[in-house]
Image 1 (cartoon, rainbow, N blue to C red):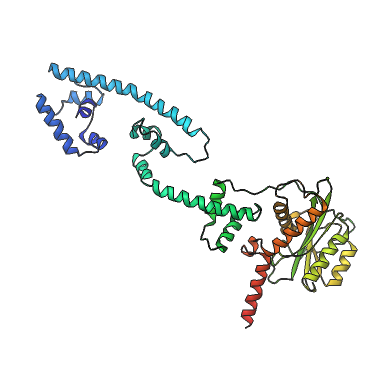
Image 2 (cartoon, rainbow, N blue to C red):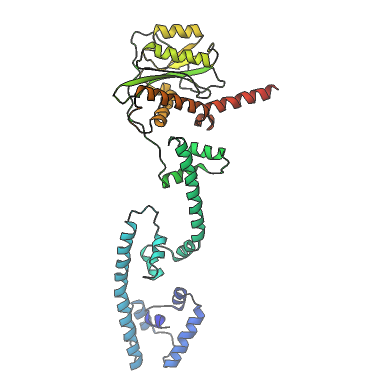
Amino acid sequence: MALYESTPGATHKGIAADLGINRATLREWVLRDRDRRGVAATAPSSGGQMAARAGKTVPSEDPDERIRQMEARVAELEASERKPATERDILRKAAKYFGRGDELVMSRFQFVDDHRDAFEVKRLCEVLDLNRSSYYQWLAGRQARAARLRKDRLLAEEIREVHGEFRGTYGSPRVTAELREKGRRVNEKRVARLMRTFSITGVHLRRRVRTTIPDPAASQVPDLFQRDFTATEPGRKYMGEITHLPLENGKFLYLATVLDCFSRRVAGWSIADHMRTSLVTDALRMAARTRAGLDGSVFHSDHGAQYVSRAFADLCTELGVTRSMGAVGISADNAACESFHASLKHGALQGARDYGDRAACRSTVFAWLTRYNTRRRDSANGHLSPNEYERRRRTAKLTLAA
């Protein structure tokens, strides 16, 4: 009743809504109070209405009523002075609260909850531009949020375990595939969110060294791939490239690979301390042994001097391989090999500057290539390893034949 009487232009509906009571109940209280004090309950005059709109109280002829109006006016002025001071205090605390840089994600709702004993919830919500009903709804969901957080932490531990198992080289798609393989029903977006939240990140690659040196005198070889690095059957299309392997003494070893376009399987590879033609011919011969022959297949490469050499051309003729080459200086024409070598360095180097000595380098690369073929999930294979992808293909063909 005091709030209604002391608020200029107040209505029963507005005050009742603020206090959470029935409008008719408030009106009855006000009328009874006025009867007790002997104040007429008549409607205000037009002059009184104009004064109310202007925020002024019409002076009463009754001395007691005039004193009550003056006290109400003083209380109103004191409240108007306290309001900006309260808002200033809230904003100061909010600036410190949201500027702490904590690992936990702070929300405005959490701020209101933490300071509801010092300030009114209504005032906190007004200053932070929040809806009070939204805050109470947030408050009601506290237990559900705590349960979700516990589940997120448990899943994050599983993600960290998979991430560590593959030496930090797996991103969210491969981690998701690995978890599903273990029977965990999980969404990739949730895995990606948790990896960001819990800072589960991989290593980054360093600047690459140029290994493609074109031979101006080489004969022209057509591009039979046209950037199509897929195949419908294994053993039909291969691609190859050379990459460098940095050592601890500032020198390099060089790796040549032969990849099957069907499954991205490493069919052949060779490591040497030089980039002579024998580096790539050794890799192609290994692929021929692995696949029990390459007759009728196509091999795609860049215009490196090793691949355009007479010795390599003669070997392709001997093995029944048709050569294919992309445009000079266009890395996208051999993008799949570029991506494979990037993954190799990403996974084998683990952010280090070099592989150590020659023996350590050969051992590390050999282990990674073996693991790649047998275990590493490739997005091009529906997150299956190359060997598993080819095995399922063979099984499907045998089933159809039967």
